[in-house]
Image 1 (cartoon, rainbow, N blue to C red):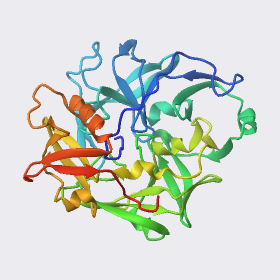
Image 2 (image 1 turned 90 degrees about the vertical axis):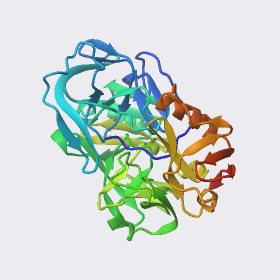
Image 3 (image 1 turned 180 degrees about the vertical axis):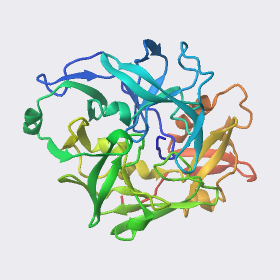
Length: 396
């Protein structure tokens, strides 16, 4: 399924209107109605089998197309052959069927769709999300990720695109019906094939096996239930340990991004590139032509995003728990540990919230965690703890 980092951020949304001319007047594209939340792209105004769906769809090249069970009023989910699908660690009940899907004026016919029980993982950004626009749909069109804009191309002159400064690179299409995109990436000296996964909001993730060949400038470790780009906790417990590393540069095509932070996969899985890449590049994905076109916007990695309180949270059964803690952070020195219950934050009582949904709780947490200082009370710790944000990488 989709991948995300663990920290809840303020919602940062951009709303686009109708279909219009795109990158330049000579290119015919459709601007999609989107929100960008924690770096991930969510699209609305989706129509499934003629029914307009209320809710957002995550745009995710790393997952198949999916919709939440019960969303379609006209669809009878009974008598369907339900099976468990899994990423190897966590499972979800689903059945597969086919729908015609319209995204504004763009039609996609006879798309295989997984109908799943739930897309709520308790981390906040999946509030009001009812489905996934996945790789098996996206492979049928040309898509433009351009900062706050997401477009589907109707007609484009690729020669003119190159004259505008875009550089052509090869896409390697693998997986289900050759619909999952990969690209060659360098991480210092090592080069490898990386999954392009727009459902991750990190920059890059490397495997534990290849990490030892990468020249590292710094590293930080974290313990708890995942600090990876993967949404799946991959069997993690409160005692699991992960790390991120800072490397000299990441090469994508003929371009480099300097001093980025890279997640280290806890097993031997391959590399992946997440949606954070769109902060540094405008990318045109020509999935039918198996090519992508890049234009670099920024070359130096923004370490500001690693200014943190040293912990993250998750909402489960109406309660807020510590999900991760950064080792050697001030939060850890205050004896905060993964699995502890957060009782209050800045005076807001989190212990008894029967009338609030997990989305509403996460929205309130996002507001409080956006401040530079927080006062929290933790179950099992008598005193209130005052925390200031700290840079996890001191060479900023």
